[in-house]
Structure formats: C-alpha cells, structure tokens
Length: 255
Image (cartoon, rainbow, N blue to C red):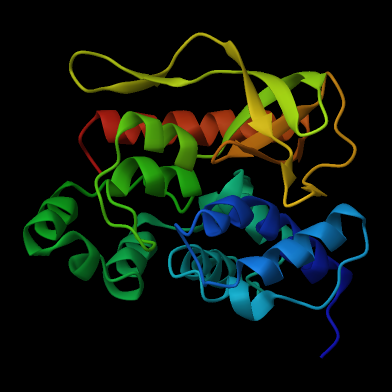
C-alpha cells in the first residue's frame, strides 16, 4: 500500500524523535541500522522504504499514538498532527479525556506490570483527571521507563529523556551549540527549569547529519543530547506549555 505524503511526513518526524533513544538501546527494536538508514534518507529529503513496522514495535510510544488517533477520530496513528501532539504538543491533546488516558495506561500500557502492584495502586489513587498523553507527561509522571530499562529516573535522565528545546547560537560540523534551560531540583524534590545555559548537542550519527539546514537563530527540539527538528515559535510555546503542565502534575505528587 502506497503511503500518503501526510503519513510519510508523520513517520519522518517520528523517527527524528525516536532515533536517539533507539540508537542508545533504550527504546524500540534492535534495528538501529535500518532506522539510521531511513534517517539519512529523510535528511536528504528522499525517504526510502517505510519503517512503520519498526516504529509500531516501540512499546511505549506507539500505543500513545494509537490513543491520540482514536480519540481524535483519525485512523492513522502516524498522521503528522498526531505525531506532533505526542512529541511537541498541540490542540489534539485536548480531545483525550483523563478517563481514556487512565484506561490506556492501565490496560494497554499495562502499568501494573511495569510499576509493580504497590506502585500501580499509588498511581491509580493519585491519578489526576487533567493528565494528557504527551511524551513529557509520561516521563515526569510515570517515574519508570516503560521501554527496555526499568530503573527509576534521576535528574540527568529526566533532562535527557524529556523533549526540550533550544535556540541555536553556533553551527559546527558534528555539533550545534544551543541556548537552553536545563532541569534543576530543589531541596523538596520539586523539578523545574533553571536559567538558560549554552551547551553542545549532537547533529551527526554514523556520518549522517541529523539536521542538514540548521542555522544560528533557529529553534530546535532536543532528545537524548541530539537535535530532532526545527520548531516554529508556536511549536516552542506549545512544548513549553505542556512541559510546564507535566512538571506541575509531577510536583503536586498528584498524577
């Protein structure tokens, strides 16, 4: 079946976010070479064979995309706006009610298995009906990775695993230098974004450039120390909004 341009765009954007944790063997199938090959083709604006089946095997990400598609009456979980809702955030998140999300986490994601019985009961008792199916909500509020590793997050892994953003201040061959706001934790264990710093992020993997048209002044999204894609100012505002909401839920100790 031939893919629509909308699906190709959605899959391509999804790969940009899923690539780095997969390369680090944290999430998804052991097909890093296939995903890297696809990434190289989309960077050159000529996507090759579809890797949709590989993306469908990401056990945390794909069920969220299915939920978003279902609750928005969209038959395609890789529709570009569905993908954007999960990774960056947009108005489609508003169409997923708290009850639907809780059912999804309980039954589809099977959090009882991932968290253990006691942690799941605590999760269920404290679940906040205002929760929403965004990547950063999951990272800050589930407290354990539901990919291949199950250890508790520390602050460094929270910061790497969440989707953050920065403004490019310098472009190098393999790295971009960006101005971004890192996470910090106060004495009570509350997490917040600290003052902006400059840091280097990866823009190359196995001789393939991740973002080919990066330039100073661009806003970009970041995941596991690598660049994902350019963001518009509206997308930056959405990502900031849903990150703030996710942190507020986490800091209230009320899921």
